[in-house]
Image (cartoon, rainbow, N blue to C red; front, side):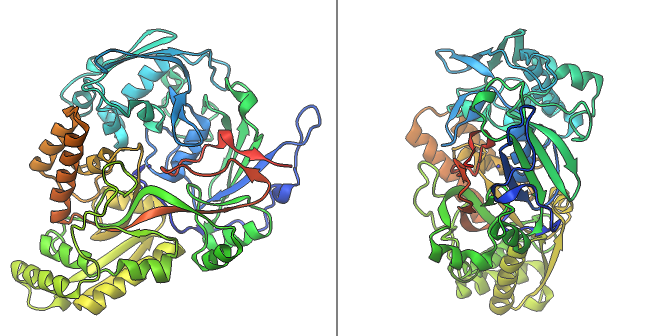
Length: 542
């Protein structure tokens, strides 16, 4: 879900506003001031983004919008490599702990200059504990950031400083090899500090007239449950390299309906990070050669509430994990060439390319043995006394996957399993507040390092939806953050993953793949391994 990006990644999606033609199929519906036809791109998402404020976004639906409206010090190119964004020049100290950014002559959509003060303001706003930004921990690489966010320090202690309008200095706790990738992530985006100080709610409401960005597109319109319209930002510093004039984002909840709209020429693309391809159409698109499948740094899993009366028991969690037939699920339901997951970190991450095999899938004997131990520890006499509600966000694909898992648990373990679904924003809140037992979860990497997956569970709160915490786990990750030898660091991260998986706070199901189809009228529209798709680089071929 969760880049929660509490990536959270959506496999299936739902509802639609039928019969709305936004110029799809290549016929432009509007023109510019010179009478030239505008290049329009037509895509869909499954529901309203939960957040429009960069510091409050935690999911891919929100992320794909804010990544188009804002720009950080760096931006990922079409291959996922960080390149200069608002920073024209980046200087790094010899010890790798101090970054000095020289900003280019960028502007906000209202014509205000983008300054170093905007970055300092935005980062400290995200860290302010009163703002409850779940992704605040992504800023903990900065000196004083964790202390401020946890109430043990002040904003003045955070070592991000606007030396002048054009110069930003950032001092890190430790050398961080992936810091250039972090500054391309939405928690690190700026906001117009002048606007935000005058109107504190400006960036929480997309329909606020003061909601302005500094990225390649402006958010021109948001109609809840209907559409989002993005228009090319004429104040953007690199506007000449933005090909698309208008992005029409339809909110279509049903993936089956989205498929019909794509086949009718009203949508140009189906796939991550916007939506997904209807599972029933995968075989057909494979046969025609239109389906694109590539590896993705993401894990689809079931998360357990370890504070629940039943699921607090490790053996019950182990029984549920080993009872799932992952390969059968992939072969018969998802059909997207996914890889069965036997660990938390995807195989695409450097040093983690091989299966770790912390548990076996579809192992009825091991599952029943663990269940018996759990029943005894809980003082229960029969598997039928174990009642589990398996939750998921409304989606045809998620429903199919959860039904498969439900049947695995019933057939193998003989327990009572009930399915429950809710709308995305409601579901996220249920996970965050631990108001669930077991639930669907997805995490796609925010940056290309195994640490990003493991740090999710370093502490309670934030994007940790399990309630699980371990001092030993924290100590291992702390050692990894200061370790400079690559091989030693990788082993520490593997040790952390092993400790985590032996306690089963989550049940990894499979490692994601990018599955997409697109119309002939678009190009440069392929997500990178982290499922980022930069609209800045998309071309419309008329």
